[in-house]
Image (cartoon, rainbow, N blue to C red; front, top):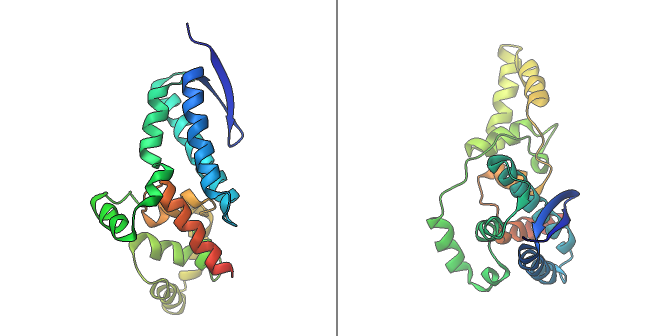
Length: 193
């Protein structure tokens, strides 16, 4: 018989056994300590915690379970990576990313490169095109067919906005691991300055 503990990750409650709790606590503490000195550290940690909660929810639903096991935590840790992964050089990181398959991209509105609602930029990011080309296509559709405005507004309504760091990574087809979360926040922090 194992004792279970309820934990809260990203405002969601999960049940774990004692051993699993210890492993998860050490993992999250290491992540929090690693990002503590960064100006964007709290935001990265919150995004990582939200991603872990999302993965736990999928595991529970897929397996129709009520308790997160040590095996589940180890799988999530393997997928997300560890703080020790930050010790590798950029060349090693590039080589490793070339070996990983691209994540399947998802279609979102891109708020980071939006002129109106981010529809054109989201489409361009999804297909790997230049946003200016998609914007020109919308303008031409307005001029020649008059349907560009209707199409744009329908897409605006249908396409969800990429709000979280994870959604922005999905939009670009990047793996959602610790290094990508940090890289994404570093880029956003650099754009704000």
